[in-house]
Amino acid sequence: MKADPAIVRIWVEGWALTRQVAPPVFENGGYRVEVGLPDQLRRYVFSGYSDCVRQHAEAISEPAIFLKVCAPPEFVQPNLPARWHIQSPAFMMLLSGRMQGETTSLPDGYVCDHQVYDGVTIVNILDRDGEIAATGRIGFPGDLAVYDRISTHENHRRKGLGRSVMKRLEMLSREKGMQRAALVATPDGRALYEPLGWQLHCLYTTAVIPNAGA
Image (cartoon, rainbow, N blue to C red):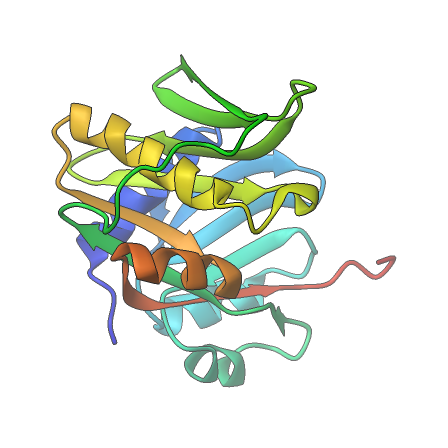
């Protein structure tokens, strides 16, 4: 299952937007994103495996630089130097049209809040103490809405809060006239999104050189 390079490009632009980092730069077959965090200095995103991935892997020797490849891990790992480790699987997913199901009311004790800054909308569900129980954000870099950082605090899971965040993000997307959306999911996220109508676009493999001190 090959990724559509146009979708990958918009998704990378949306990821950089929602993370409030500089826009991606295309170079040597992939998109370079300067993340600037201690545990993730930079990432390179590729719409498929090619020799460009191998060339990057051979040239990089330091940790905290990630290779993100829209391809199965068995296509990626054999072509990387042994210092590179493959992380847990992830999945690029797409939504066309509306999500399945209706937006349900929040459980007692929870309220929803959303904020917009620098082109990014953040939806938070707060508990009685005003603490964030679940959160997600969305950006609109092109003709795809890009969902990102969807999470529910472990003390508030199995209450439908993740679904509520997704449905509220969808409402914001529909207000913008968006008909399609993209995200990258963990295995747990995929289990949440598929019943809502999201479909797998491609496997998304991450490689990194572990920090020797970790």
